[in-house]
Length: 114
Length: 155
Image (cartoon, rainbow over all chains, first blue to last red):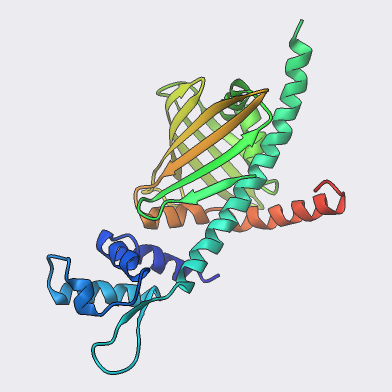
């Protein structure tokens, strides 16, 4: 898995406005004007956020005549999920070692009982 | 089964795992340095305690070594109680990053305890860097171990 992609995705989602944009795009595609509507910021500022999301591969602008709707790229999140799953396996491996240790502690604790 | 959840809106990782042990035993496994190095792993790394003062306000540091390569971790025990440990955690490869970790031991009765571990990192970038630390090693060994268990008919 390319770690740079992952860092870029995480960095792109580190901003509350961009997470809000992603949440709204998860319901349906939207034009830049529709996306900008609820925010108290310039259209230019919204474009800046979209460029960061686009560079991270989180969203894309569909080709065609203006206004081009913005589309959420679900695959970008697969990278994150795969990465989290790898971390989960590592944690599980660690806890299986703890299982074995606790089993030996159980035996010792029972021996200590009068 | 280890359950894991990465919060999408906060740089938090939550892990839940149930053990056949009492809360007191889990607390000991987390606070007794001799027990701790036996499970924190991975197996290919040798863990050496540098200092370890497991009490509220104490501090800890350990070094993982493999083939001359060292990874060091340190932090403070903010609070230790029978059902709860709160501590800070820094991987020295990313010295500006610090995670706030909470381990909660939930007594399920019948000698079973649920461990609820939560790590709050100071940024999404920090969570990224922190999760990656030492990951390659652990994952490979996890697969190797699972293959062995499958071969033995243990799974």
